[in-house]
Image: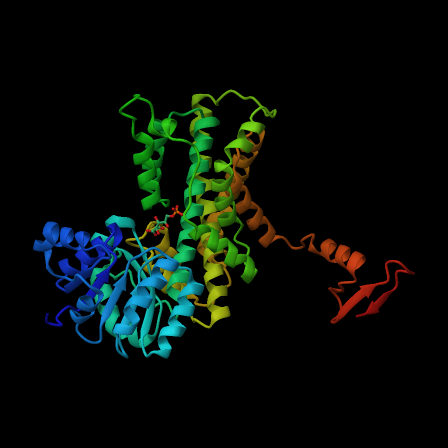
Length: 479
Ligand code: 6PG
C-alpha cells in the first residue's frame, strides 16, 4: 500500500464518516479505518465516488497508508475509548506525527494525552468540532488546540473543510496549546445549553402567558430570526414547533416527553467554572433545568402544589407581550455569552493559553450549533478592544441591554405572577443587576464570616485585613 493519504480517520460512526467524506470531497486522499471493518467498506462502497479513500483493515495498514508527517483523526467516544485508540496507534507512529482527537473530550484529558504523547515526539491535537452530522459533512466550526507546529501543517486542511462565515473567513483558528481547543468547545456547548434553555423559556411564556399555539409561536420565531436573534437555534426552533406528529395530528412538542437529556459537556462547563470561580449562572441554570425536567418522581410528587391561575392575555396584550419576550430573550442571551467568554478568558489565564476571544467569536459565526449573526458583533467588540473586561462593557451591547431592561423586568413580573418558571431569564437579570450594583450585600456576608469564624474582612477606607472581637467588646483589631 502506498503512503499517499494526507489524512486518516479512524472511528467511522456518523461524525467520523462525514468528516472523512468532507476531507475527500475537498480533494484530500483519506485513509479510513474502523474497529469493525464492515463500516469502512460500507463507507467506500456508498461514497467512494466522492473522492479518494483508502480503506484500511488493520491499524498497521491504516498507519502505513498515511504520508509523513502522519495526520490521524480519531472520532471515537470520549473517555476510555479514546485512550484505547491512542494506545493502539501511538506505538505505530513516529516523531512529528499527529493524532487529532475530534471528539467531545474533556480538556483535562486532552492536556494529559498531549503531555504523554509529547514525550514520544508526537503531536496530540485536541480539536472541538461543532455542527453535528451535517456540519461534519458540509463544514463544521473547528476548534483545534495542540502545538503551533501541528497547526502549521494541519491548519490549512482544516480551513478547507470548515464552514465559512458570511465574509468568507474559514471557521477555524488555533485556539491555543494543549487543551485549549477542547476547552473552547466545552464552553461552546455550555452556551449552547443556555441558548436552548432561554429559547425554551420564551416558548413557554408565549404558550402559557400569551396563550399562543405552537404553530403561532413558530411564526414568531421565524420573524425573530430575521432580526438581531438571527441564529441556527432560533431557525430550528421554528421548524420543531411547526412540526405536527403524523400519528396523532397533534403538535410534535405536545407528544414528546418533557425530560431533557444531556451528554455532559454543559455540566463540565459549570463544573470548571466553579473551579475557576467564574459566575456562569445562566449556563448553570440551563444544566439544572435539564436535570430537574428528568426528575419525574420528584415532579409527580410536587404536581399538586398550589400556584396562581391566570387566563391567557387578550389578543392585543399578547402581541405586546411577545415583543417584550424578544427583548428578554435577547438581553439574557447577551448575558450567557458574557458569562461564557468570561470562562474562556479565565481558562486561558489559568492554563496560559493566550486565547484570542475575538477569534473564537469569529469561528463561531458559521458551522456550529450556536452560530448567530450576533457573533459578528462579539468579534467586533473584542477586535476593537482585546482586553474588554466583559461583553457588557462594550458600548453597543451595554446600550442594547439597557434598552431591553424594562421589558425584561416586565416579562419576569408576568412569569412570576403566572407561575411560569424562567430560571435562565431570571439568572441573567440577577447577573446584570449584580454587576451594575454600586454595593452588593457581600459586605454583610463578610461580616457574618468574621463573626462566626474570624475569617477577617477588608475595609472600604483603609488597607489591610481586620477582625472584630464579636464575642468581646466588639473593638476592631488588625488581622
Ligand atoms: C455540536 C454539539 C454536539 C452535540 C452536543 C449535544 O457542537 O455539534 O454541541 O457536540 O450535539 O454534545 O449535547 P447534549 O447531548 O449534552 O445535549
